[in-house]
Amino acid sequence: MTNTASSTHQHAMVTRDGKQLVITRSFAAPAALVYEAMTNPDHIRQWWGAGHGEVTTCEVDLRVGGRWHFAMVTPGGDEVSFSGEYQELDPPHRIVHTEVFDTIQSPPSRVESSYTEQDGFTTLRAVITYDSSETVDMVLASGMEGGLNDSYDALEQLVTRPAQRA
Figure 1 (spheres, rainbow, N blue to C red):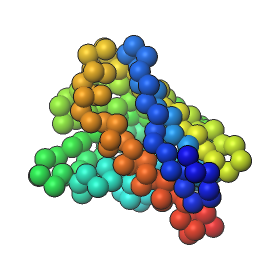
Figure 2 (cartoon, rainbow, N blue to C red):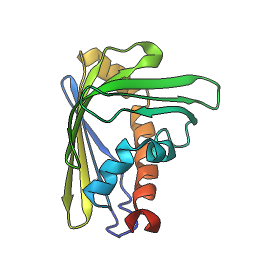
Figure 3 (cartoon, helix red, strand yellow):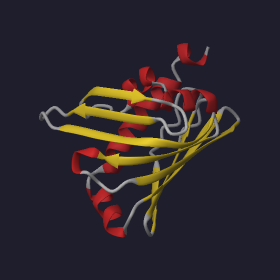
Figure 4 (cartoon, rainbow, N blue to C red):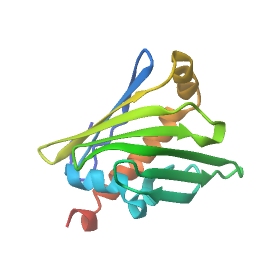
């Protein structure tokens, strides 16, 4: 990892623990900026699904009980859609929400994300709890890790732009 102000040049670390996936990634930006980029539809459209399609829906009702819905159309014409509900919000430190892969009507998962800032870097740690080990197997086999890393690389570029840091 190159420790510069412009980029952390790393991939997200994805580890499995039974019915959970734990994702860890650091960003070269303050926690408030990373949190904002992950919750503001104008910013989400710039990084979510990076390079894997055109974002067609990006709705965020950022309040406890509020819903979110992101969708894109892939270059092959397939729609990919995710949605959920916010359960806990503690900006810029923590978000807890549900997530459903609408495209296949997956069982809901619970995503607990924390944002820890130190020395101008923010570490995102997301613990995703699924309904079964089989669902975790399916998620890992889907190529989720590659798409996640592409999106997080685009998020890194967004939060390290000079205009975002002003």
